Length: 166
Ligand code: GDP
Ligand code: MG
Image (cartoon, rainbow, N blue to C red; front, side, top):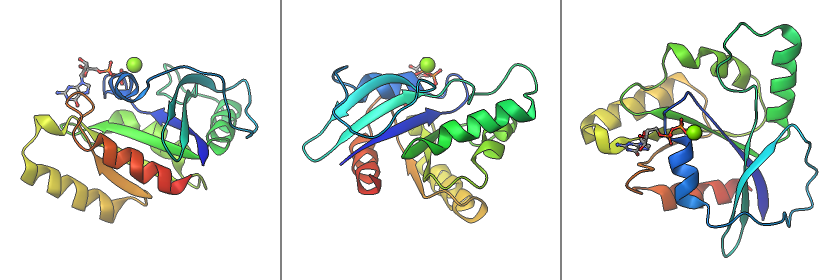
């Protein structure tokens, strides 16, 4: 099993921290899946039964200026080329104003989207339960997974869940 995974989310939610934790190596791609130059490889995780290729999809993150119809279409097409999307938010802030652009892009995509709630070490467990229950009702994410990229909590569980979708 192998697949391309795009990690999207506002600055400072912990995307690089997550990648640094899980990426052991940057190696040549073994996957035979087609890939376009729009996606930049950030790292490859090779597990016993799978290979996860984490990529950056420029243009997906919150734009400085309002994007035109064409750019939105390009971004949506780029998201269609990956096998899974990790949409990362900070547990303290949750899904906020700055995420509207991303939510709009994700709307109607056939690619599975995981909501990854990071920095759970910074909130009370009861608060986390409330956040997860609220988002489960409100949004159609394939999975909602809480983690602490910094401390490593639940990261293995997240990787195992991703594997099931590849
Ligand atoms: P990015 O902009 O999304 O790539 O975010 P970074 O990975 O650069 O992280 C931004 C800041 O958040 C850094 O100071 C990280 O150490 C911190 N950070 C990342 N993950 C966690 C976490 O799980 N818990 C806590 N407490 N801090 C985190
Ligand atoms: Mg970063």
